[in-house]
Image (cartoon, rainbow, N blue to C red; front, side, top):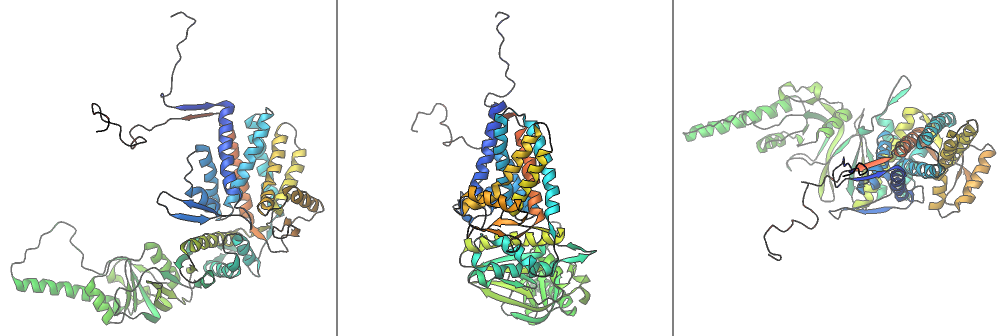
Length: 546
């Protein structure tokens, strides 16, 4: 071998795939744009739904961004980063997932044009970061403070549910949402403390969406353990027990030998008297309802029924915690410690048959710090979609109260934001200015998409909106039903500020991260994982067809 010939050096396994430079950037941007395009048609009051069918043939019909992206099982690594934005938005606010994803896709699309102009990815990334910081400043100045009184919270809930399959009942559902949040919120030093987990959402197929109700207490998907127990208890005194009301088996392996039939009888009597003592402890505390996290022995059920005590068993831990919050009771781990001061109170505990299933309603709790929304609807898919819409509305109302700042929707905020960022871009010098301008243009994707989804001409709509904003109408937005420009604030299209700030920062951060990737190294890593496509390979030495 001569000195001129250099043997190639392989530093990666044979089956690795490597994409570098501009190819890697193009591939990543294309994948992210595809994800954004997928959910883009679901945005706004006239957004369409997606039907997702999984490997088990279970069907999900939804226009909730995060649900669509999670159900799609996206494999591409860059596309997965976009899905993460939706998850973050869901965790932080509960709404605005589609907005965040569409913004990220548009930022990357604009970045692609800048890359074609030979602008370095780190310059674009820096420009986006500057624009994102400016956007936060503009948004905070734009936002207006709210008071928890009046119809403002209801308008926020209605806005959150518009276009989510709950159209005809949104007023009723918004009322329920606001009442639920007001019930569980606590105000200290002018700050609201709200844990949205204290609003339990139960769903039952049957009736219509209008039959959805708010229960000031907890609904548990369990029925009483014995039909001889009362099915309704008024002025309920509730014992919450975290231990089994049954005879425990020994901790260590033990063998009990009984040679005499009389001893067998006394052994059974001993078990019976132990169970009777357990029930005595419950009844001596004056409890007339028992919720047990573990099992209740058949004999104990009989003794409880004799004393007219309503009992349900194997209650989930999360439900036990909610019961404690709703009734003011304490969860007791040891029956010996149960006293009347540990009991919770409720106006009524009742077993209700819904369809062919029994549920227990614990309602009319005086100081309920946990409530339940029972969602009804004609089919499983409708009930699921209403639940997702309610979760969005609950998140929006809660975050509006916590942060005390809201903005108008209908694309008005994004147009005002684009206007402010454009003015900021003019004050910059250097190539970052182009990236900041691109960021401003990307903001317009939200009103443009709202117009496209409503079948309106996006160019006309954006032009009209910009003209209105130039005339200092800061909440000028698009009415997708009439195609006219409206004052979104006056029309009650309101959203929490946090939706916008979270969406902008997440989209800018992810776009910057994807842009800086110039090398994608993917190991196949298939060896030893499951069977190759087409099942097992033929065994050596075995003729074909065997």
